[in-house]
Image (tube, rainbow, N blue to C red; front, side):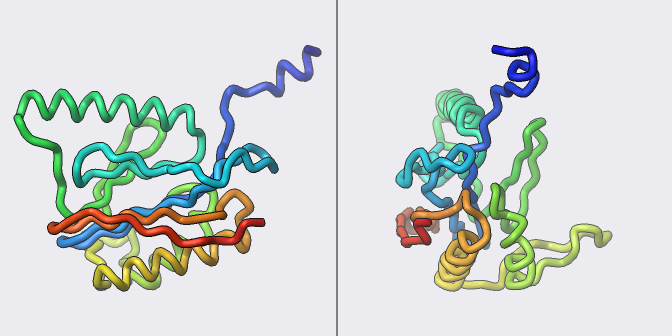
Length: 192
């Protein structure tokens, strides 16, 4: 390796993709595309970015998969410890938590993360009637949509994102969690 190649080397690899979650008090819709890529190469078109932590707790993550796998392992261990100490599973009905690389997290009504999120966050803001996060006091983020409408909105944003984001595509995996059950749906996306 030349010194120039060494200077440009990075262990970080953005594997692309996008995930979206929308919650109301009685449901949560979590979705992610199934394309895993690196640079301009598609590694697989059938990779789940959703990880079940508990019966009704799903972690959706995109981008650098090595970090995500480490986070999944860490949170699964934390959940197991919680389960043994409290004799129950962790559960937060109808909510979405976002997190960042330094460990900060926040409870929100909806979120979009990943390579296509800058394209669809304004659509979610508009459709979910979100107040500006700069307002004081901060508004609530309760979605006005029914569960069926939220699933349809998720399908719509995942259909439009691959038009401009090459890292999002192939298929979207949608998990719907409500008081009665947890179910999965899939929808085909652009495969280019």
